Length: 164
Image 1 (cartoon, one colour):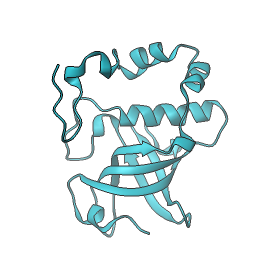
Image 2 (tube, rainbow, N blue to C red):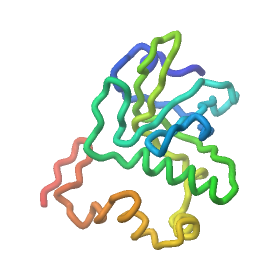
Image 3 (cartoon, one colour):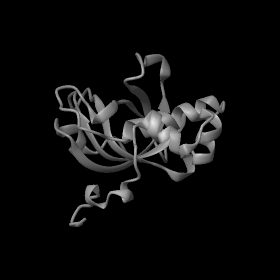
Image 4 (spheres, one colour):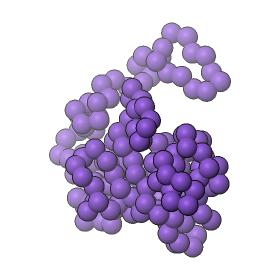
């Protein structure tokens, strides 16, 4: 299975639905503002190519969002695995991506994704690796200062209207 055709054709972000094994390529990263990943098919292991992830769902010629947890969560997961001397390999379910290249030479940027639970890092592992409580970690490192449920008016789910 190569990349989905709708992703290769579109040069704007598209909602998609495919799963990959992502291997971090730290040597290709320049600074802490990007992740570079080699993507492989789950079943066959065949290479799909390189993909990038940036904070706030940024991609070339695109506009960054106000806030996004996807990049920060993925970076934390990969760094935690690395600090535990585990391979920096994660299974991702891609929800939204963009091809900033061509169909023949794709430049895939991952915008929204879900980390497979078998590859996720638990709160206990975060506390051990970073030497602090999960609450402090999310407040100081990720920038989440309050649980979303403490302020119901900021919660929104597609098709749902919430009143405070």
